[in-house]
Structure formats: structure tokens, C-alpha cells
Length: 326
Image 1 (tube, rainbow, N blue to C red):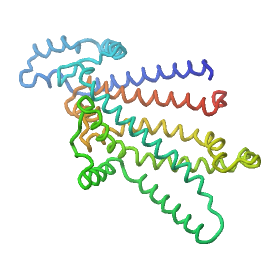
Image 2 (image 1 turned 180 degrees about the horizontal axis):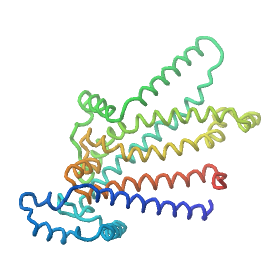
Image 3 (image 1 turned 180 degrees about the vertical axis):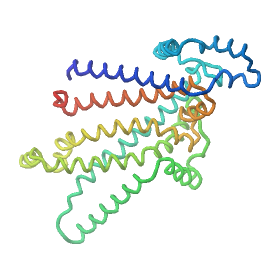
Image 4 (image 1 turned 90 degrees about the vertical axis):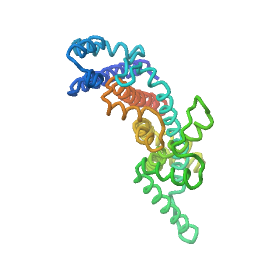
């Protein structure tokens, strides 16, 4: 893998993160709301407001505040929460871990569900001939495609409600709202998080299955595939060894987008399953005009999206080294 290519992508990554940080910070400066007045409430006098603004550094010019905030962000100092009067780093500690665990589990489920099923559906999509066996296979494939389309159409929050009703209220495999922190019981934490992770993963798994199956079927008509068959390769061997490598390139792009979408989508699912992660804190902080917390969470989520796309570029290099020539 060319080092020059990696350095160029790292440079683009750094510039992108700087632009995102600047846009996030300056956007909140334009909102017509004074956090100091909100914090002081009825006790807000001009003298107290001026004193607290000086203490919080809000009396300084916006560019100065931005670079001070940015330098603190790089070193892990995200400022002080207006609502909780503690450092944002301390406030986010467990919540970042919880959201990261939920996102990682959901993404792992997407890969575990979609890639094998995508390969399997592509392998048995070519149904030829007549008779009861061929008809039965066509019926099964039609039913599977209809199921995939249905799952794709259901939004994750509604999937979460269905899973809560079936597995929580009917089968009683978990207690809705009975979240257990990983610091208290790692096993109970893992078992509880499976269901919100599954709610996030199911619609996206259906999308990846459909994309992978279509990509494989397109590659199956290529000359190199016919050459592989002419050399005596079996269907599964040619599918895994030759077709899947090229077919995975668009899938990797979509999986990178999926991981970014999972991190963002976890905000809603955390509300459905009462998971105390970053999403819940973000909504509360927006309502309370707690800008240091909101800015930090927005930049963290945006950074995840940018870094994931950067890693996807590196994976392209591994799958098909010819991409770097472009």
C-alpha cells in the first residue's frame, strides 16, 4: 500500500475534521441564547452576568474562544457543562462507552447476518429448469426477497418497539427499561444491549444483503468468472475466491456508510430501550442549551463518520490495489 496515498488521505482527514469543528463551534455562537442568563435565572443582574461571562471566558472574541476550545478538544479537555457544572469529559465517560458498545454490536450483527446470507442468496439465485424442485426454490426466493424488502421498509425505532414487545413483554428475555451498566454486571449489560443492537442491525442487514447479492450477480457475468469455471472451479470456490473479492468493493462503501449511520441512529434507539448513552445526553443538552456538551457530541459523531470513511479507503486498497492508481 503506497505510503504517499495514506499520507494524502490523512491530510484530507485532518482538514475535514478542522472544518467540521469550526462549523460546529461557530454555528452554536449564532444561536440567540445566553447560557449565563439561563444559568442564573431570576438572580441574573448585569454585574453577575458580566462576572460569570468573564469566569467562563465568554467575554473573549469568538475566534479566541474557538482556538481555545479546539486546543482543549485535541488534548481531551472539552470544557465545563453549563447544566451539570462538571467537565464534559467526566460527563461523557460512561456514555461514550455505552454508545460505542451499542454501535459496535450493531455493526458486528450487520456483518454476521448480511454477508453469509448475501453470498447464499447469490449462490442460489440462478434457478433454471422446471418441475417441483425449481418451483419450490422460486417460491422460497420470492418469499425471502419480500421479507428483505419488508425489513428494509421498517424504521429502526419501530423495529425496536416490536422487539421490545416480543422479547421483553411476551417472552420476557429482558426487562424493558431495566438497563444494567457494564460497570455493575458486564454479562447483563451485554444481554440487554443485544436487543437494541438487533433493532439497529436488521434494516441495515437487509440493505447489505440486497446490495451484495446484486453485486455478485453482476460480477458473475464477467470473463474472469467463466475462465475460473473453465479451469474446473466449483460454484462455491469461484464465488468465494474470485467473485466475492470484486463484489465486496461497493459493499465496503456501503458498510462504511452503515457504520456511520449506526452511530447516528443509536440516538433514537437509546430512547426506545432507555439506554443512557450519548444520544440521550445529546437530546437533554439541546433542550438545556448546554452548548459545550452538544458541540463535543456533534464533533465526536462527525469524527467517527470521517474516520470510518478513511478506513474504508484503506480497505479498498487491500481488496483492489488498482484503486490507488486512480
